[in-house]
Structure formats: C-alpha cells, structure tokens
Image (cartoon, helix red, strand yellow):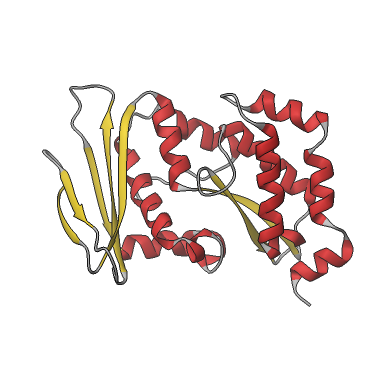
Length: 238
C-alpha cells in the first residue's frame, strides 16, 4: 500500500482541503498576507488541482497543505509553473508526508521584477544540439540558438538580468551540468520526484537565476519574501 493510498483510506484529503480553503477565514487571511492583489479563488482551485494530480500530496495533512498555500499567498504568486510548486516530501522520522514549497523559475523572475531593482530578466536551458556563445563579466552577453528538434541532453543553463539603474552593467550567469546536478541533489528527495523530475529544463533555468541574483542588491524583495515564508536562500558557497 502506497503512502498516497494510506492517506486516502484515512480521509479524503482533496475534499478536506477544499473545505479548509473555501472558508471565509482562509480567504481573509490570504488577502491579508498577499503583498499584491491576488485571486483567492484561483489560488484555491489550483491548490486543490495540485493535490488531485500529485498522488503523494494526497497523503499529506490537508491542514499542512492549507498552511503552505497561505505562504504562497504571502508571496503574491500562483501555484504551479508560473509561481510556486507544492512538493510532497516523505518525513521518514515522523512517518508522514510533509509539503514543501519550491519556487518555479517564472515565480523567481516575477519576484525579482517586482523588487524594482531589475528591469528585465532572460534565461534559457542549453542542450547539446543548441548553438551557444557567451561571455561573463564586463561586457557579458549570451547568444543562444536552440535547435528546433532533437535538442539532445541538457548541458547547462544561462540567465541575464538588466538592472533598473542604467549605469549598472547587465549581470550574466552561465552554469554547467555539475552545478545543475548539485542543485538537484540538494532539493527535497534528491530531485527524484516533483519539478526536478517533471521539468528538468525549467529547474536548470531556476538554478542559473538563483546564482545570477547574487549580483542583485541585498535588499531585493524576493530575498525578504523567501525568508519570510521559510525558503532557504542559497549562499554564494552553495
């Protein structure tokens, strides 16, 4: 019997979660937590759909999922590829399935742009059949021509930020497989499930973005928001 099946036998997490998220109390708490106006109904339905489509989430405590959804509201982001993933994590010590939040790369870009320090962000995943030319440091640039078909294995990722201060040069970050594999190994479950398994190219982009944002001023809003809701902010040695 899987953990998901065990959770379904004990209770109906989807229905229980729906009951929690559709209360007026939850609605008001989500609106109060959000740094920008949000569509609470859309947030609620996306959370319920995530539980329906990810079997291991069905074994998690609906109250715990509700708490994580409130944290997502606190970032003013949607659930899913445009914002934040709900990721199940097996807590072997407690014998439970816990829920963790994992920023999608588009969510990270949204937070960076919202900060006011960044005017534009671009990123991409590099595959073995792509054409790539780049330079980091002074005068940095990336010229990336993805192959139109049969792109081959994932080799790396790149990211560029243009700052709001016109005097500041663009920041460029290019990473290879070693750095991507390290980030995957440090994720919940070692990247064997969740976004790293289902969307490796997107997670490679996110890894490049996180390293890129070392160059962004320390007051960047996304750092404060991530720390507020409990994300681990990678340090330069990560």
